[in-house]
Amino acid sequence: MRGFEVTEGQLCVGGVPLQRLAQRAGQTPFYAYDRGLIQRRVAEVRAVLPVGVQLHYAIKANPMPALLSCLAPLVDGMDVASGRELSAALDAGCAPAHISFAGPGKREGELRQAVAAGVLLHIESFREVELLARLSAEMQLPARVAVRVNPDFELRGAGMRMGGGAQVFGVDLEQVPALLARIAQAGLQFEGFHVYAGSQVLKAELLADLIERSLDMLLTLQAELPGPVRQVNLGGGWGIPYFPSEQSLDLGPVRAALLVAQQRLHAQWPHAHLVVELGRFLVGEAGLYVARVLERKVSRGEVFLVTDGGLHHHLAATGNFGQVLRRNYPVALGNRLAESTLEQVSVVGPLCTPLDVLAHKVTLPMASEGDLVVIFQSGAYGATASPQAFLGHPPCVEMLV
Image 1 (cartoon, rainbow, N blue to C red):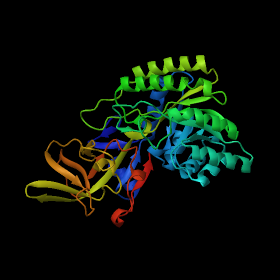
Image 2: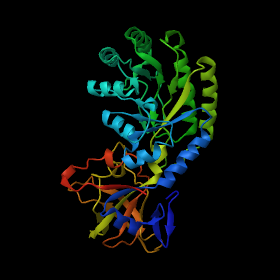
Image 3: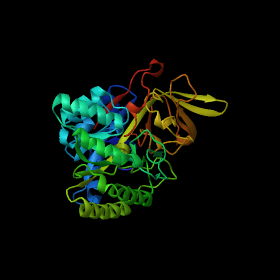
Image 4: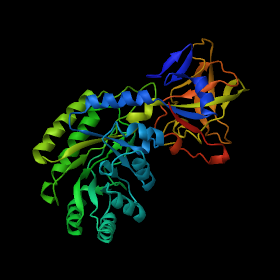
């Protein structure tokens, strides 16, 4: 419940009591994102980043239009991974010069869209170079490009590894010199590099080591450069705690590593700036998922709270979005926080599958029909990362408060 207010035993979002917020939403289930908490988190990150290091928002974490419009003036740029995300970033008011486009398998239409908009494309294959060479010639617009490098090392301790070993992401380090030569031949506008080795890292020393090793790797490419380096995006991967055994990330060592990296970068490539790309870390803890209890059901001594929400809206909370071992997100009865009579329950959804479990055997106040179950840490990888059409149940609502 980090940052959320409680008034008379009831959770508040943006100063609005939960039951009133449910009326304002017009239905349950819904997601609610606290604008003030997002602004506060961006300010906290700004205080940690060395002067001159740019902060980008990774739209994949949460592309809600109102949230993007809130973030656009607070960050230095946005990172997208599809043509639709690119349109969303532009609609939110982010300048094309400050948008970067990453991801494997970019379609030709998306590449054309990106070149026309003037955004920075993170190249992930030789195929993309050839397509961009043709499109740039046809459109008489040299594509702005950076190379996403697949490191020759792995980030251990990440919730999800996206670099090192065999990967669909980026170009293997040993192939990068040939790719850079082809970029020069094709007349593309080279601007720098991108490294994203993994996500959901909670150990600061791992992130600090990643920053150092990533820069070491990139600096070895000095002799192969087709032009001056203007940007080095070292990704993000900053995690947030979801489970009782996890602690919040200590940002002190991360700041120290970025300071050293910035000094080394300017010594070698004086026109380049560092970019940190964060998604979950900026918005994850500012969001809630709220579902209403439809029924309190007892089966052979076990209590089930059957709600109108479930995995079709919040796949991650049910453990079906990459968890190896299912663990419960923080959960509460948002309208009964002050009550002391507790019981062990499982919170489930209405879907006809045993996978539809939002919380397994957790301790909550004794619930009744109509009470509001809250899943915390729900600001990232929620609504758009879930199969909302599954079994034909209604979609959820999203609110920025």
